[in-house]
Length: 303
Image (cartoon, rainbow, N blue to C red; front, top):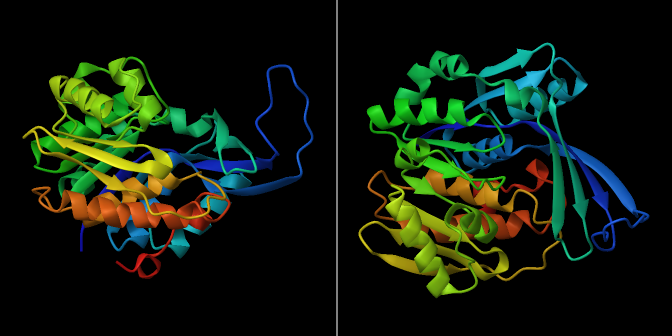
């Protein structure tokens, strides 16, 4: 069984259903509202464990009812939460999701306890990180903590996967050089490279730029079109998305990364076939509203 460690965020998602995204200055009525567990880190951890990997999570929660709800969710999935700790002053993270009738969303994040994760929190999980096959992190928690985890991982032959979301225009070179696999969407790829991703040729140019920055393998996801991959060995290709009716794209990218990590061989020799599995899992996620509740179990993916 693969061993995965995820460093990342925990959020309570409030989903606001609207006909379309509002224009600047516009007041709109919403036609429904719901609450669910979320956060990129938590989503990726749950995706990995549901994909069949032994998964450990490094994260922070507040001292509130939202934390109780999330911890109960993690326990149901048998997620290892020994490194999920509490900050008594900051509340559990929150996300407010505007979801339109076409399944597209815009998300506002309150970081809360997620922003209090420290280098020392990572060092306390050093033994767990050293024993992993792969580690995953994103940008909803402090970059300094991610760099520390990736340093430990690289020193011990553990694959590092970076989900560079939310998009950042300035990523420390140190982090990119510690990253084995980076998985941006087209917006995030443009933020990193300055290259607007519109077709496969521009994907290749953006990937080449990220290789120059030190990343071994680049995956660029482009929603309903699919995902592009490029390796430092100059191998590249495109995996088409599964065609489904999209209800909500929340957690689609997180599902992709969690399933990828859980199925990828250490030498990346099965990268393309693993991307197909991850794409199938994501296609299931988008057919249901909400984040963690929509992430499929391995048996549902059935590939």
